[in-house]
Image (cartoon, rainbow, N blue to C red; front, side, top):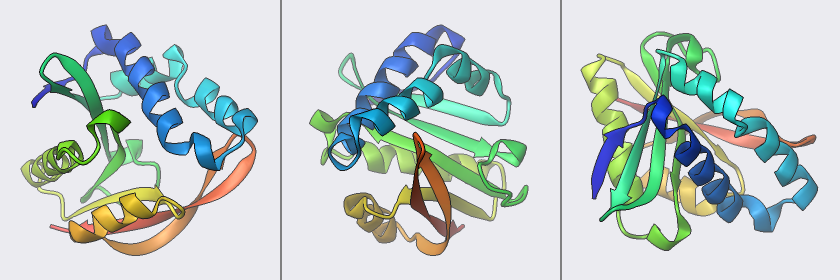
Length: 169
């Protein structure tokens, strides 16, 4: 495994892996119409370029050999998707290609997020996870996260519920 911080030069690769991993994870439980509406909005190049350029957000790619296997996106300050305060770090995305599941990539990406939170002297790390994503919920619970709330997430115009999970550092 190798990890590297993403830059604007990685924009197209970020778009490709975002679409691939999100589709692999959520296509079975959502209509194609809602999925495509979300993908078109969340992963258009202009949107990802803004996210990459935001100094309060960071992206990291993880590789298996030379193949891009997944990525991490973290947010601090005003970049967080919920107002959690300056002492919190959000893990907005941990996405790993399906063929690399169960190989420790998620653990490594989460450990990187915790490391960054500690370096920045954050007191909490938090994330939102779809209430129907039982594997992810179980993974985060094993890593010490507890449910602390919920918020709406829109897949197209389909309102869904994300559980907010927090770990105190």
